[in-house]
Image 1 (tube, rainbow, N blue to C red):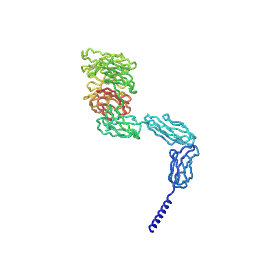
Image 2 (image 1 turned 180 degrees about the vertical axis):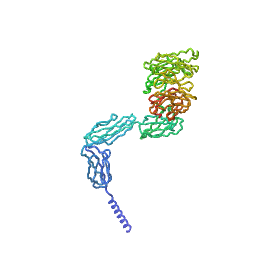
Image 3 (image 1 turned 45 degrees about the horizontal axis):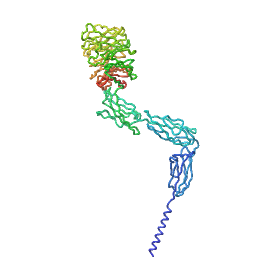
Image 4 (image 1 turned 30 degrees about the vertical axis):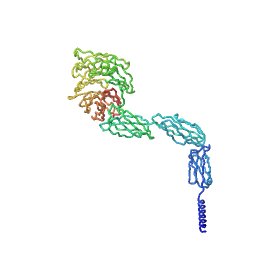
Length: 612
C-alpha cells in the first residue's frame, strides 16, 4: 500500500516539473528580405535596424534577422541618398517573415562606389559600382582602360580592363559619368613597375674627409634589401634614404676618378615586390673608347667639338662634346700617324705632326720631317711642308723633326724642331701668310732657345715656351716685335710643363717643386707644392667666372682642385694610374683627360660641377 502511494506522488512531481519547463521557453522567429531601388535593383550596404539590432544588406541587397523573439517590430532601412523607410511586422514563433523594401529618392542621384581605384603596373581587370536612380552615361575615360558598359539605368557593376604601365612613373586619370544633371568623377591610378631610374658615382674629397659614394634613384619609394659591392670589397656599406625614399646614397671608399665599379642592389616596394639590379657605376661623366693609342687632342668650334689624334690605326676623330657623338673619322693611313696637333687661327687649318702610318709607338715618337694640314671645311688633307736639314745640321742626326708648332693671329708662328738621335733642338719661323714658308730665327741654336713645348696665349698675339730639362726661364714670343723674351724664375727651378690661360694673359707654371700662376710681369700667385705621381703631370684653369684663380691638377694618381688666390687645395681625389693630358673646355663645364692603359684608350670627360 505504502509503495503504491510513493509511486503516485513521484509521477505527479515529474508531470508538474515538465509543465513548468515548457511554460519558460520563449517562442522565436526570423525576418528576412531584400532592399531594392526604384529600378528593382539590389541596394548594397543599406542599414536595416530593429530594436537594438542592425544588419547591412549584402551583394544582392539581402538581409536576415534570425532567432528573434516572436512579437511585433518596427523595421527601418536607410542609405544615402535614398529616403529612409519604416515598416511594422509581426514575428510568429517558429516562422520566417519576408519583408522587402523599395527605397526612393527625392531627386536624381549618381555616385561611384569608390573615390579612387589603384592598379599595379601589369595589365589586368577590376570592377566598381555605379549607383543611380536615373539614366546615366560615361562621358570620358582614358585610352589605357576599357569599360564593360558606357551607359545604363540605375545601379550597375562595371568591369574595367587596364593595360600595362611601361612608364617610369604612376599615371593618374579620371572616369567621368553624367546622369540626371549630375556629374561624378572616379580617379584611377596605376603604379609603374618598380625600376631603377639612374645612378652615379659621387667623388669624395680627402681634404674634407668626405668619402666617395654612390647615388641611386628609383621611380617608387623603396626599402633596401641588400647592397653588394665588387668582389674583395671589405668595408661595410652604410646607406641613407633620399628623395622621399625614392633614392639611396651609400659610401664607397675605394673609388678612383676615371674608373667604374660593379654593384648588385636589391630593393623592394611597398607591396613587397623585389627588384635586383646589377649596375656598373662610373666615376666620370662620359667615356669614349677609341681603337688605337690616343696621342693628342685639341678643341675646335668654340670648344663644342674636339679632334682626337690616334696612333695605330692612324686616324683623326672629329667628336662633338655637345652632342656626345663622333661626327667624322679621317683615315690618315696614307699620310702619317698623328702625334701632335696644332690649330692655326690665321687660316683655321689643323697642323699635324707624327710618325709613319700604323707604326709602333717608340721613345722618339715624331720621326717624320713633315707637316700635314687638314681643312675641316673641305676635309682636304695636304702635305704642307717637308723640313730639310740646314747646312750646319749634323749629317746623320739633323734637327728636322717637328716637335710642336704655335701660331699667332697674323699667321706667323714658330716651329720647334728636334733630332731623333741627339738632344739638339732649334726653332724656326713658319709663316702661314706666305705659304707656310719656314726660315731661321736669329741665333736659333742657342741653348736658351731649346724649347720642348709651345702654347698660344688667349688672343693669339703671343706664344709661351717651356725650356728643355726644366730650365729656369720661360720664353715669350710677341708677334708685334717678332722676338722672344724671357721670364727668369731664378735658380733651383725645374719646370715640368706650362698651361696657357685661354681667357687672360697668364699661364700656369707646373714645376716639380712649386706650382703657381704667372703673368708676363713675372707676378706670381700663391704657391703650392703638389707631389708628382707615376704618370704624366698636367693642369688647366677652371674657366669658371667666380673661380678664375682655380686650377685642376693631375699627377697620375691624384686629382687636385687648387685655389691659387690662397694657395690651398680645396679638393683631392684618387684617380686611375693612366689619366693624363688634362684640359678644360673654355666654358668651364667639362674637364677632359686621356686614359691610355694597357688594354684600351679612351677620352674620359668629367662634369666640373661634380668636382666643386
